[in-house]
Image (cartoon, rainbow, N blue to C red):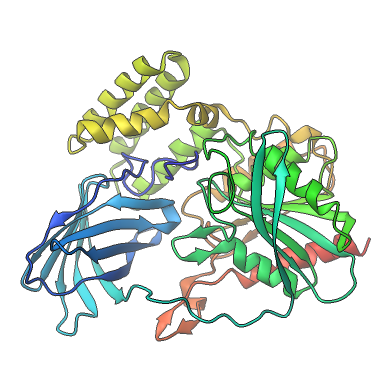
Length: 462
């Protein structure tokens, strides 16, 4: 989970949900060059996860190394690197995991094994060189404009990109809102620019799109320590900015939010001057504490963890959340939670446990645990489109969608759809990815893109 804004907790490691800053381990000076990205698909009974190791060799001979698991919202987990001849060991104490692989003769692959307690699986990593220069970008068939607008309520400056189709307009218009974690205006997770791809598709099809850097990210000011409710004012500021633009059809001005951004969009629809419509891409339908427990259960089941261990882990997790909610004094709550984390994971050192516990007792995490997405839904009266993927490894599509449908029963303009084989980042099944430079390249689901555009067009024609 991002260490900068609350999101989905208990990722791949099941026991630790926060990325911490430390890195590095001494590798022999004569070690073969390993600089670059090492990517592979970790195959699980319930699907697969892409893991990405990033290695940079320093002048001291040590490696700066980190681990990302984009689908699990895991970024920059500390990794130590040990090399013996052609054998490479990449270990993450935070993830309680270790990868041991053998480097191919040409240095393009490692073949080896990923290990976690009770779980061992073969894993092949492919090498990609670090980028040394930006690739030239073709001019898109629409106008791009860098914009800055103010959130007067919070005294923030938000910066983003406005894309405008050719022609006189006015056009249907949307603001894009990112998922949990501080993200740039493209909603980049790993190297996948989710919001940038949505913006490009919609603008090519005649929709004005505004996307912007999250608070405290890129060129936007402010602190990223914001709750879902806090972020409503950013969405309102974006809508008000667009209402000043002649290219915008004010009757067709809406919000598209991914994950937590979908909940921000729904909350914004309950405020004065609401959007004309809302599109939620896998928003939460359950309270935050239940979201976190469900994710741990789902991950542990995919690892074929015995049912009694899953039950024990979720019981401990719920107890921990109750402590956070009921213990008002942060220092006391932090001490209790840190102790529980170390008992659950003896490999976790005290510094890491304290840092994770501090995050869990923060104001934004306390809000996340008690946030109920259904409370405000009766006040949402605009048209709503809810999209989920059946291969979502982060959020359970069935339970969250069912909860939102029930909570929205008073709104007759709610449309829902589940997309077969689509994951939480709204990527299609990997078998449908195009091959670029000999490697599969993830794309935004064509089915999702078409569903969004067709629904907006239907609204526009009314």
